[in-house]
Amino acid sequence: MKSILIKLNKVIRMIQKSGFRIGGKIAVGYLTIYLKSFFVPARDILFIAGGVGDKAHYRAFGIAEELKAHGLGCSATNQNNPRLFKFADKTKIFIFSKTTYTPKIAKFISEIKKQKKEIIFDTDDLDFDPKYLSHMDYFSKITATEKKEYENGIGAEILNDPYVKTCTTTVSYLAEKLKEKNKRVIIVPNKISNHELEIADKILEKRKKSDEFLRIGYFSGTYSHNKDFATIANALVEILRKYKNVKLVLAGLLDAEEKLNEFGDRIEILPRVPRDEYYTNIYKCDINLAPLEIGNPFCESRSALKFIETGILAIPTVAVKNQTYRETISDGVDGFLAGDTDEWVGKISQLIENENLRNEMGKKAREKVLLDYTNKNSHNEEYYNYLKSKL
Image (cartoon, rainbow, N blue to C red; front, side, top):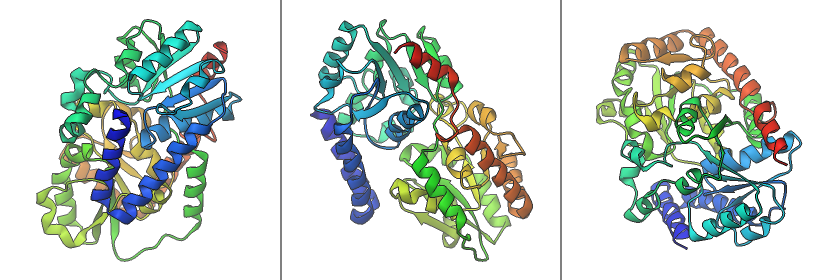
């Protein structure tokens, strides 16, 4: 019950921030997914997600779609499913993704272990270890009740159980952290679902609306990105002063830096929208930005979604020069990597001044995302073979 109340509180906050019409629409979408997940069939593999938001979209429902495409029987549900225990006898592999450890989950895991079935722990960040929470900007902004949920780490009891031998995660930085727990770790990147690929393809069929302005976009998602955005504020001040034909598009939940106030007439604020409308907002931009705090463990553990979600629309990205983006982007080919302010200014400037470069880099980004980051073209034989060995 406490878990449900926490999620309800998050929905209320979202409606307060996004307005009743948009926030309510997003909430209805989440509720629909939530209820539908209660009535999934029993398959060989079951994902148990901690929620129904973007993380569950990628780490549970999305990967379930990927596995089905490779001949594996798979379902995904929510940890609050009242029918959860019915899966214990019928399912062979249980993948817990961002699952909060509750008495109900503890009892469910106990039953799985009795039957000697496979349990896999999945995560896309460091919130399984409380020692990293001080690095998590979002943590300082949530309620005391929500913080209680993080007290021992999200799903830490599952991860630290000696019975659990295998973990899956998004990037190599996180993989190394999980290997410290003496687990086998398989990297399973986030990917674009078939439905969202169709949305992107339809958007690309239309002629892009244009005016005299070129738009640089930053899509924050949550307030956990305030400090990330702050790392490029000085670079953006230089860019906006230098190029009068440039507008800055800020989408999602973000507290923009005060130093950008002088450009208020050239800053467009886009509200948070349902996922089906998200790609339409992205397509309004010509250049995408993906900054992160350097040296922050939580930031180092983030996946390259900001490259993936914009790359599928052939929009070039300038990203922070950290481990994840170095492993994802070929600098100067399908995107740009930047370190200090001078690099951010220089590489954004190249894309502003050179339309051919923007188009070619966007095209290469889309090619990479289509090949490596879509469920349609997914290829992760290590993971598929491991699962098949446990069936």
